[in-house]
Amino acid sequence: MALFKEYHAKYPSHGYRWLNAKIRLDTGLKMSDQYAHKCCKTAGIMSISKHYRYKKPGDPFKVYPNLMATGLNITGPLQCITSDMTAFRLKGGYYELTLYMDLWNNEILSYSLSGRKGDRMTYISGLKDLISIKQKYPGLEMILHTDQGSVYASKDFNELLPLYNIVHSMSRAGTPTDNAAMEAINGWIKTEMFTDLHITSNENIENEIKEYITFFNEERPAYSLNYLTPKQYKEYYAQF
Image (cartoon, rainbow, N blue to C red; front, side, top):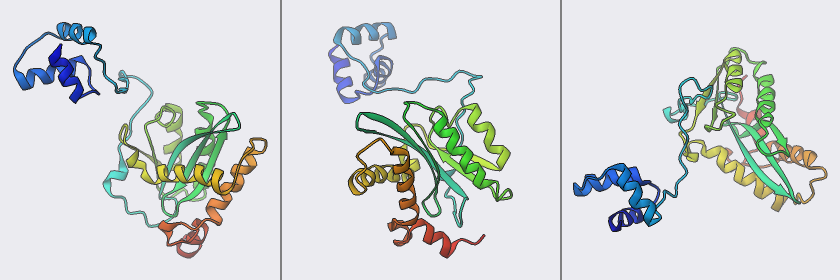
């Protein structure tokens, strides 16, 4: 038990099976997993990490390759779109905002807001609005990069993409840096909405969000665009 406590102090994210294997590797001491479990249970040792659940074969959820890791050369609009959901509370209300952003000029192309936790339709509604834009350019191959959220990985979501020449790319599990641009924007959005634009009421939250998206796309200079707005950048450099 003292040995398990020592190893758990070093590796608190792991459970009894991993600790047992590590002790065996380091010391040569062999114990059964059942005995290791008894020792850890008696000592109150538990993994402090949340682990992803295994998806059995035939599960409709699917993980797609991370195309962002291949060093994409984004040279124009609509080549690579990234999406994520950010949640916030306002005056006792809970909201989820799903965004679809063009990585070329950081323009928010579509979005959807819901006052219900876990509302999958915010993802689907935003995707349908994105598809409406994509349909104007049927020959353009678009990459859509997301995390491994259950809606993004669902069959319903992914069945739509190939119909419109959209290729799905996914971040690695538990690796938000794979979608760093979207993660940064999520942080800025909440700061600007409440600190700069002083959104304090949920009575007209839909209009407030709409006005903020317009501000973000047309009035907000972006450091990554040499302090042009997304709209200005597209007007100057897009070659459609």
